[in-house]
Length: 85
Image 1 (tube, helix red, strand yellow):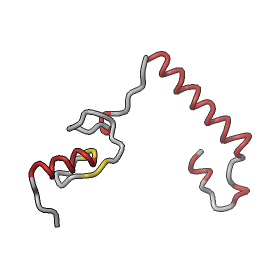
Image 2 (cartoon, one colour):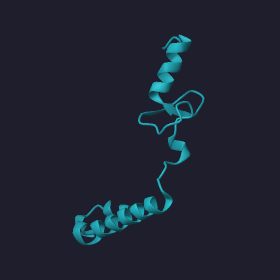
Image 3 (cartoon, rainbow, N blue to C red):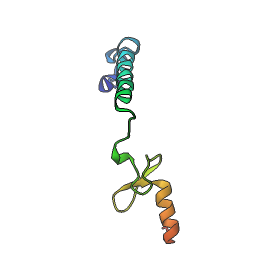
């Protein structure tokens, strides 16, 4: 559906009211049902900062190639008194 919405000519794109919104409603209902069945929906582990052990709001890639929350990187740099170029 997303690829179809990106068509160059608007007449080639799906109709918002009759095609896109019904699909989004189905996806929303599916997600709600999953949350009710599973209890709570957790983000995939790659969205969690390994330092803070919480979902990242402002992810940054560090020089080690891993992604961390920005404030975790900043706190580490401040503790190490590393000079920034």
